[in-house]
Length: 290
Length: 320
Image (cartoon, rainbow over all chains, first blue to last red):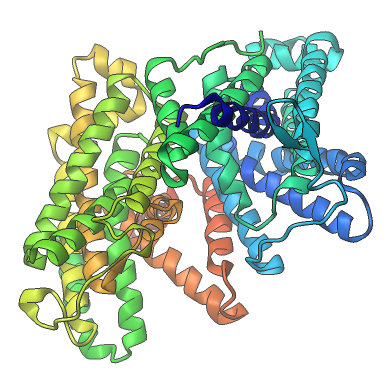
């Protein structure tokens, strides 16, 4: 059972799935790092992105080209959501934000259920089943692309936060709201920008995920707790942490599924989540956008 | 005196309902309202009074439901005793989860997340284990009789649910007037200050979560014997956690009558949505979500806050 011929492909498969988890978690960790809120609507916004990419594909646009549309579209969705709903309803309390994002996720998910029905949909692309031979394992092409994209996206986010004026403002707001306001930063705008950028990451994740996954109104559930686990494990607000955390979780899930069976395999993720929260809530690489 | 009169009249009206409401549908509706009023009060003890928001009350609900089902089906335990065991089981699971979370100082969002994760772990276990019937779930055999907690109509279930609702109100009232209640409210307002004043915050929070878990466990046990069926998705799914927490938030956190009011309004709104827009899947949930956002945005004190404001205004008018 512990034969490397089985273990190695499973681990590589886990790594590529982990890259997708990292893609989803990158946006979540940015939102947490700046707003210090736990965005429960993250999974359902990913679902919105997946449906967007799905219908664009039906209209004849390749999912990878749909990136150009979905990333800005989800950026504006996130910006508007934070600006008009979450920020206004929070009254400055974390628990209220938790409840409002939970409410938003319930609304978004069930609107999707109402309009699109509970059907699970997939798309056919010429490259969906194309395999790349990595020597030790055959990996589907979309997974290799997702893996590379996760690295690129993490680098882009890092650059955005560390090297641009917008990033400097975001870091300032994350560190000290009042101080940032005093030096003339529009804090509400920066909050909405951060939420928008975090949601835009989901637009990218959705386009990269669709060729190898499915979309249904509840698809967000698959990712939301996993994404929280990745974010907590990697240290809330840390991009490199989200990347490494995502890969770790992917491998854990894959190997857990191999050793314990499909149904119990998922439990490894939640046990890691609980253990991290209890023993190391700052995560493996705990840092808050600093 | 006035308040007592109102409560006595309310109780008398509630007792008379099955003689006035002949429709099984509306009795069923009221049973749901009462069941969630009980569990909403349970959530309220922990979330409303102690300020610890749980997103995983399904862990206690499901454990109560499965304890009642497994012991009745597998070992022939009397369902009434089964409800007591469901309370114990719910309380015990709550103690374990509470111990692990509070021992390591998890608060706020972290506490919400870890309770959600615990409920998910239990869902996966219930899906996997054999004695829970796995993904297929468990059916309680039909055997009508009061001793067996099965009634031919809805009236019997209604009175049982009403009994538990009254019990939950009594628990809420007693808590509000107890030392523990005051300590919990101090923790909610400022945990560090409460600790500095000598409140054993860890012990108080454990008591709150155990009480909350026990009351939710009763709800789960009642659910099993009312619907005669339970599966992992119903028992431990996020849906029930959300429905439980909506009830006191809409009704009014940290109030005795908030959960009852919230449950009635929540399920009334859900029913209204169904009537107005047809029985489409997820429609009532859209209303729940909108209601949650609107309440947090415009009425953070819940409907009880509105009731108080109206009463205050009315008294001022009466005094003038």
